[in-house]
Length: 210
Image 1: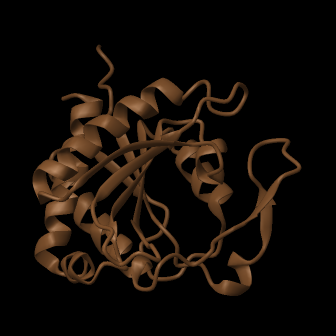
Image 2: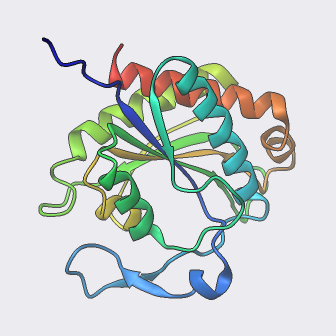
């Protein structure tokens, strides 16, 4: 009798939401590193709730299409740092970790979508670098296509704890700028959140295959 392979699991990580007393705590930026970073800087004002709303819509779309979905948080609060978020997805053997954020800038005219992926570092990200970069390209293209947002491209990052502790392909999508008045209004609207979610789901599906 042939074993039935379960559908891939996507791990959605809505950014921020950590209480400041926990967020100010330090954790190693990568395994064995003496460099430490705060667990959560809080993000741009309003970012945590937007990220959660988009994640919930993305989960619904993926589950509708038969994918398994895990979420690092399903409510406004979160009690851990970025190591905990990465380990959550690692333990569930996720086929892809999608970290959902919205950006902030001192320049309120900045707008658009960009996707971060782990920079190559032997011992930390060498096992997920190529797949993460490929996933980033597919998700970025789909989010831009669904939203019509300005395409700010792909950005490798070596300084993100949530990447350096990940053992599964991982990307971080900056879905827009909370500091841009027009983009903030869009990001806070149900209709635009659904457009972003459709892009995230389509990009994940393009990466994972049928």
